[in-house]
Length: 188
Length: 364
Ligand code: SF4
Ligand code: SF4
Image (cartoon, helix red, strand yellow):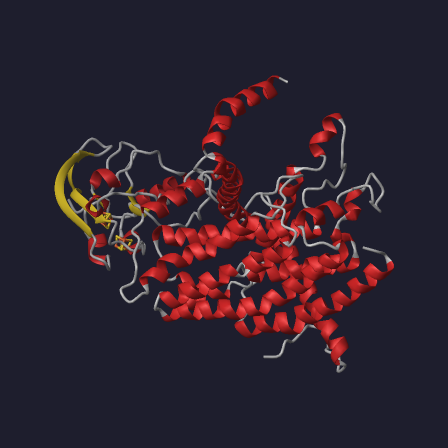
C-alpha cells in the first residue's frame, strides 16, 4: 500500500518525506488546474435540454412516418411486408381497395392501407420495417420526443403516421426513391 | 440622522418595555444572530455547492427555482420536511433521534466566539480558541452515535471511520492552531483578528494592511494549509468523506435517516463547512480586517474593516473547499490515516519549530 509518487523516492527518510509532501501538493495542484479550467469553460458542455437542443444525428431513427405523393395520398400499398418483418410485432396493417385516376385518365383499383398502427412503446427502432417496404414509403424520422401520459397513446395510427409537417430534405430524397420503386399498386 | 431617530423610537417603544419585563431578552439577540447566520449560510451553500459542482463538470446546475435557481435549497428543505420520517425497528430510538442534533450542535456553539465583524461577536471568551477546538469535536460524537443507533452495519462502519478520522485529524488541526496562539499571544479570537488588522503596532505598510495577516508569515502559511486540509477531514467533506462514502457504505452513518432528520445532517455538514472556513479566515486571513484600507474615507469606508470582508473571505475559502471536493477522489481509509500521521503531523511539528524561530527573531 506504499504511496508511489511519480518521482523517484530517496533512500534518506527525511528527503523522502519532503518528496512525499511535494508530490502530494504537486498532484493536487495539477488536479485543481484541470477542474479550474473546466469551471471557466464557456459555453458549457451541457445544454438545458427542453429549452435548447443539440443537433441530432441525421441517421437517428425515431417515430415512423408514411410518405405521401404530391396530392397527399399515402404511397403505401398495404402489402404488409413491414408487419411481417417487424421483430416486435408492433405493426398492424389492414388493406382496402380504392379507385384512383392515373395521369392518363383511366380509372384503376389499387391497394391502400385501411388502418395502419405502430405501437411505439414496443418498437425498438431497428428500421427493418422501413427496409422491407417495397415502395420505400415507410421510414423513421428524427422526431424522438413524444411523451404521453398513457402508454396506449403511444400506439399511433394512420393519422399519426401521415404527418402534416412538410417533408424535410432527407424525406424528399426518400420520396424520389419511393416513386422510382417498382410495383406501385399495380397488382390491382 | 433620520434613520437613527427611527431606530431609537423603535428601541424605546418596543425593546425597552420588553427588556423591563424580561431582562433575559438580551440573550436572545446573539442567539437570533447566530441562527440567521447559520440558516442563511446553509441555504446559500447548498445552492452554491450545486452551482460549483455544475461549473466544474461543465453542467448548468439548478436553473428554474428563482433567478439562477437560487431558491432551490428552499424547495429541498420543503421536500425533506414533507417526507416520511422513518425509524428502523431495531434502532435505539432515543439516541437515533438525538444524533442529528448533536452533529448540528457544535456549529451553533462555535459561532458564539467567531468575530464576524468589528465587535460583532456573541461572546469574546478569553479561551475562545480552546473552546472552538473543544466544541468542534462534538460533531463526530453525533456521527458515531448515529452510526451505532441505526443498527445497520453500513452506518456502524461509517461511525467507526468517523471516530478514526476525528482522532487522527484533531491533532494536526490543533498543532497548526498552536502556531497562531504563539504568534498572537492570546486565545481570544477577537484579539487574534485585531493583531492581524492594521492596528497601531502594524508592521505592514499602510496601503497593504493584508501583509499583516498570519498567512503571510512562513509558519502561518504552512499552518493555514495544514489547517485547511485537516478541516476538510473534520467536516467530512471529500476527499475525506469516508464516514458517508456513498459508493462503499451506501450513505454511511446517515443510511437509515430520512425526512428532516436527514435534512439536519445535511444542514450540519454545510454549517460546519461555513464554520471551519470562518475559523480559518479568522485565524489565518485576518477575519473581518480589510486587505486594502483599514479605516477608509468616504466611499472607501464600505471597503474598510467589517462584516463584508469576513463574508468575502469565507466565500473564497468555501469555494476552494468545493473546488477540492469536486477535484479529488475519495481516499482509502489507510491513505486517510497515512496522510495525517505521516504527512500532516510531522509537518505541523516542524512548523511549530519554525514558529518558535519566527517568534524569537521577528517577534510576535
Ligand atoms: S423499427 Fe423495427 S421494431 Fe419498430 S416497427 Fe419497424 S420493424 Fe418493428
Ligand atoms: S411495407 Fe411499405 S407498402 Fe407495405 S404495408 Fe408496410 S408501409 Fe405499406
